Length: 131
Length: 124
Image 1 (cartoon, rainbow over the protein chains, first blue to last red):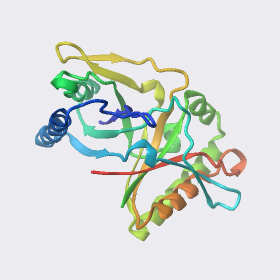
Image 2: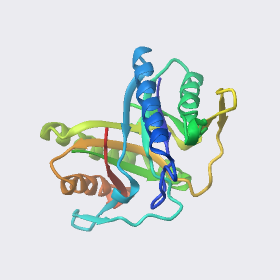
Image 3: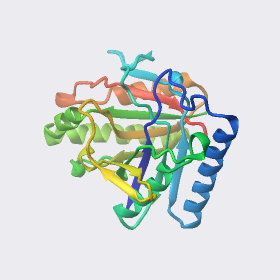
């Protein structure tokens, strides 16, 4: 079973690392690199990506001719996806364990952030049968 | 440049979709399949996935001992990712064009949905 682990932790115009010393940011990056390595070693990592900051995000709609209408206006409450992992695991519980390990990534002063990670099963593609 | 094209909706939106007649769902699905085929042909396709229904979603935090604390309660306003595409394109404008095609997918009675698609560059 494939699960997507999502860090919906970014907000528009909010510094994700307020007042963090450089070394704490480096420690978080090292943790993430190491985290991916461990998941690769167990054969559970399918994909992992990080996304550009929310100020780069665009909201696109088709107009009546099918042309893109592009704006960057999002509700203030919107949580932006900062990054995600897709893991292939035997059980949902294993996905939650991996999510908890990501949640405990080091933050300011190296203390675990215990950030929320959204976990949902990935379907191969949206099929009418999955309705 | 890689871009992620995200289709999101609130729980209400997902419930609305559940009420669509089966043939409208089939038409929408065939439309998306056509986009995937066109992107594969142009060499711009990287990945696409749909996600399980929001009722299946959990939010997980590490507890003090590092063990998972699992919760399934989200605010009503929460936008859930329904599915996404990752495309490899030459310019952001091309990513917006593809997003507009997805946006124009047919809804009930075949009318274009013109739904919002969030587009953001993938970094790693």
